[in-house]
Structures are given as C-alpha cells and as structure tokens.
Image (tube, rainbow, N blue to C red; front, side):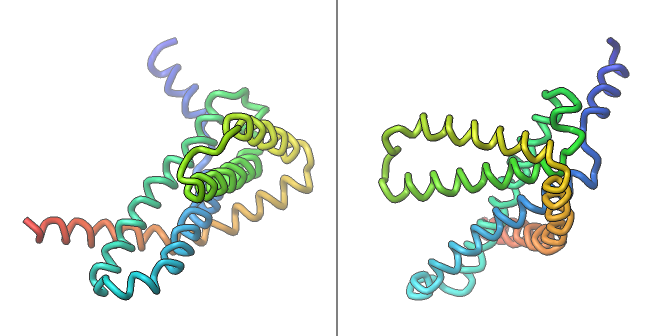
Length: 186
C-alpha cells in the first residue's frame, strides 16, 4: 500500500468534524466544569492571600491545562475509532464516544478523589480499574445496540457543542494572559 493508500485508509477511519465536535463538547463540559467547581470551592480561602491578578493567572493556567487535557481525552475515542473495526465504534461514534468519555472522566474523577483523600493508592485499585474498564466497554456496546439510547446520547453530545464556543475563547485568552505574563517577567 502506497502513501496515498495509507492516507485514504487513515482519513476514512477518522470521524467527521461534526462527530468530533459533539464528543469534544461533552469533554469540554465535564473537564472545564470540574475545574471551575474546584476553583470556586477553593476561591474563598485563596482570597486571603492571593491578589486579583494572581487569581486570574491561576485561573488562566487552569484553563490552559484543561484545553490540553480535553484534547488528550478526545484522542481516546479517536484512537478507538481508528483501531477497532468500522462497525464496532465508527458507525455510532457520537453516542459511543460520549458514553466512553463520560464514564472515563467519572472514573478518573472518582479515583482522583480517592487517591487525594488517602494520599496514596487505595488497596485493590488494579481490580477496580479493570472492573471499570469492563463496565465501560459493556455500556459502550449497549449504547451501540439500542437505537433509542444511541439517539438520546448522540443528541446530548450535539447539544454540548455550545460549550466549545464558551470555553475555547476563554482558553485562547488564557494562553495570551500566560504568554504576556511570562514575557513581561523577563
């Protein structure tokens, strides 16, 4: 297979831009929402020792990290779509991708809370991770087979795209704030 053959194979396996934005919208909603929740949770105590400028810079750094995290999380369903057979994941990319990222992010948030609370890895974490992977895989399979559930989850993904229009400009502005801050520092 020549270079053009690989390129056409690769592009035929990728989801469309509309499918990507629907899944990415859900990722953005969860990742940025989680960060804003914790930022607002810690804000009252930060008000005692941080200035307004430092609070804004801290928020800007968090938004940049969220942007990078959300793109990395988007790679998970894209890579699954590339690696798995076309009829397993690609045909219902939005529904299965949304279920995948929502359950994956919930599991990661839960594990983060447990690890932060214990200040160590909990005993039996490997088994719990394996169980979570099995449950996630089963639910992705289930969503791909039940038409009504697939439509509902797909519609949630399509409606979540609005969060991209809210948080991406905030991320771009945050990048400028951090760049200006670091350039003026030197």
